[in-house]
Length: 340
Image (cartoon, rainbow, N blue to C red; front, side):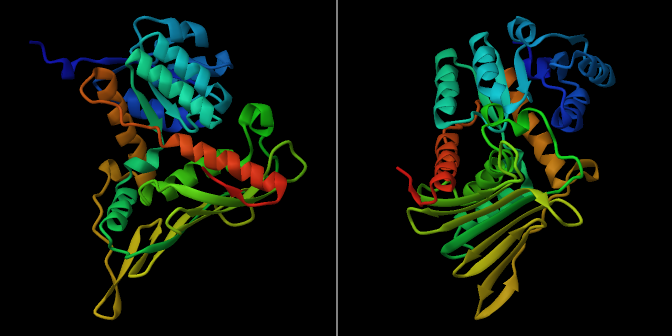
């Protein structure tokens, strides 16, 4: 039988924005087992420039890319409000998909994507690149193995510096973005916090949002509690006044504590607190954990598209989006919301 693992898998990319240009396209373009078939974007001129830079043969409109029978897998980096529609359309035409976060703007949207994947037998790879980072995986393992004892709280901050001219476009329109800083930054930040805890079930949430007169919030604060009593706290902001963007996580346990990034784990041993941070593998080429996480994510997507691996279940995005939905309800109504 021929060795199918050596063939070049045929991939299309939808969206020529920052994430596509800085991560997906350069990583895919350097792979000998990938052929970049087509790129689509509403701004066709930009798409042509980006396609030329990365050796993508064709620039197509969205519908033609989705319908192209030669394309086997599609990376969806389009605006968030298009993720569900594009993902389901690609699945229905026999393509595997990698969907940048969020997978859907609501729990129902995520369910629709997953139902389509089941019906078509095609894979959905979730674009949460932190799940593929060695430092994040080490922290998740330490918590799962009881290295921190009983974890009482995980706090995460994703803060983007305030800029002189705030971003405009679909991100500022609630009907298209689904929300502001909470949807944009809070979705991956909360996924990170919950994933290192093993995706526990949540019991209740309180939230507050603040803005500067735009259609969506600039800042969000969340205090959620799991069914076992662990606190999950979030601060997300588009208007952080500081020297640089800030992405941090702290975990507090009865026998230890940890932070990201960089990863540091401390444990109580013999009545003393000692540094128990595991040695981390050095990513290839000296790249950082963030970029390496995307490389590993795309490794998995290529394997799924080739048929040499099955896509991991992503049903945990349903309760995550239920949390986001409940947080918006809490902020609007000024009360704690119980989660079923």
